Length: 397
Figure 1 (cartoon, rainbow, N blue to C red):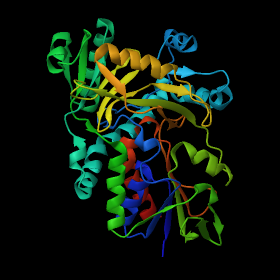
Figure 2: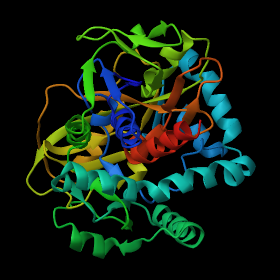
Figure 3: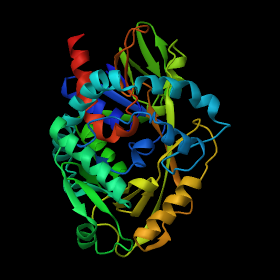
Figure 4: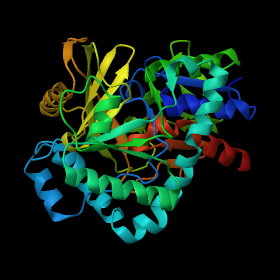
């Protein structure tokens, strides 16, 4: 009999199921789709060992003016969506002040990031997923000398403060290692300790198959059907109702909607992103972020995935393709793109909490209800790590 229901079959939910299973729990995962088919599918596929500091909200006036006037492709916003994001963004700004950000948020975040590749590595081996993984790192490239100089200084700080390795490449060196490159660059930072995955959804699928081989169940069902059932919880699925003592919310951007039904108010910054795959004869050999245009280029099984920066909007807002159009043009400057693989771009939402740290632990209001969500840009990276944190907390309770 199931003792724990996991709501959500993305990277975080499936990793949580595996961690609890390893502790001896009998776990059922419930999702409206299959494993890794929503937010976990659409990312850049990077396990970011270098991302030891979460993204704070830029507080300098020039950057804020650029965002407000739509001069940057890194962040977009809409007036119609302001009611969804203005309040959480103001809280985000408060937490982004250097004092608390440096003394509290960064140390807690960095501890998790430092564990990420090891925690993934154990699951990759057990799931037989090494064919999906490259351990050669990725590159952030810069078109301007000013941007490259600032990035080089930041990379050296990451090395000295956090022990994160990197290599710097000047314009000639990046051109030599990327023969398909068509546009001159000032330089690149090669983050050598990060890993990449050529099919993020498939990696979640491999982890899910491991969970099922070890006796776990994955069922189709609507998380919003969760309800109290005596001292425990019940959820409706295609296989009938499932009852359990505990339920764990791993629904990413949909978590606040569910939790509002049980008296929790969770402010969240919804950062939407878009991607589209293109055929390419000679694309980047390693994943590449074109920082100054807000564009990520990631080689995938389907083709070269072009990804955008963040769009502040509500979950149900209509697509706005300006960022993707700009990123496609930027990518075309760097590499010769062929035809798009899909007819329509993919879009998904990063679940960013104003405090930048994921919500992990027990509900203070609802016995048997637990959380593991709000990973911002790093749910793919941190899924196995926060799963271990949660399983340890459950074992200690």
